[in-house]
Image (cartoon, rainbow, N blue to C red; front, side, top):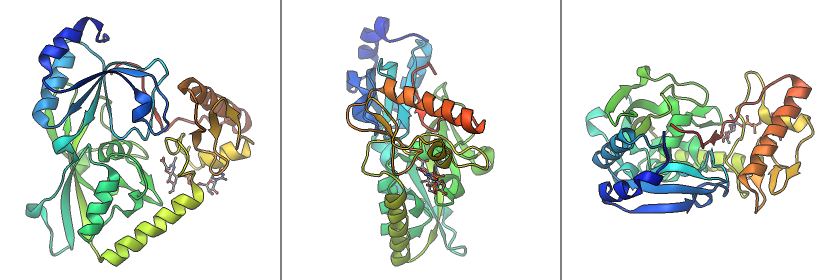
Length: 313
Ligand code: EPU
């Protein structure tokens, strides 16, 4: 894979929409760190995205897809190639009336990969659809949530999936039914260059009062247990089987430990926060230190949940 240097003019000729050159990724990540992306491009429908992915493959240019930047760490040196974001049609939500299962009290909705979870939760509340309440307060996109099989409070987005429409690294579009996915804790079983275009979610009709009450309950839990007002990428490490990363880091005595502007949250030890002027290098250094200390103390290797971008797709 190559960077864009020798292809800049060609990209200008090929792409009719806006291209943002050397855009600091700190603007696009909830951790507010990360150097410049060589080029940022927003795709608004399947045709545009197909053309783009095919062009990038033909020219052997690295690319990345980001959602709302809530689970990524971009190195200070930035991202080579093209960073893609999904907007336009990919942010829509629609009811699939042909799939409505009245007898079972279920309604199916199709949500674009670029739709924010906040918008999806609001849509569900407004339409008396229950299932997505657990996601209230998660600052990600639907695409990111599916790829991560994001979860909280005993629920996962995978529980709601009926099918997905995906694009592979060749720009080909496929529909995959739920049983064709390998949903795991924080994974969906697809290759890394697979893009979630749309997800069909199966929701249950309920009263708005109950949906709102569940959202408030989960929001309160989040505020009580997690540093929601700090800059972070959510849980930094996956919970190892039978263990809690937060408890292990806490018991290793690391709460409040900092390297430069990167700090282990005092509120929840599995959150690395940017206290204001952290670099990605400081966050990575703190990550390695946590891994070492927890390994030394408990013999357990913590694996990041946060996607560390920077090597070619
Ligand atoms: N704990 C400590 N010290 C800490 C933090 C936690 O001892 O500093 C203990 C808690 O007391 C609790 C246990 O560790 O007994 C588990 O902590 P918590 O209930 O906060 O849940 P978690 O396993 O740390 C997971 C998800 C969160 C999700 C919450 C709520 C992972 C890695 N994290 O956290 O997801 O919101 O459950 O269900 O699975 C995310 O993925 O970004 C995320 C925030």
